[in-house]
Image (cartoon, rainbow, N blue to C red):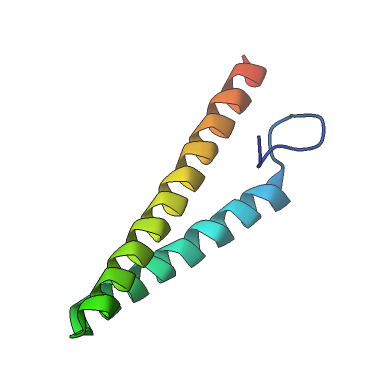
Length: 79
């Protein structure tokens, strides 16, 4: 997986901070894309704004999925 440590273990505090940083950046990217979509008039720019928003949403959802998987892995290690 992309967001595991070298040994495949659960992330430490520094890695969690990195996850949160990436999630925050994707949130900003999605908001920027939504703003762009609301303002564009040109059809080609509308296509760009839509694709950019979809890509940002996919990255955001991927990061959330990885965070959830890491949380489940951490819970199973604690049991």
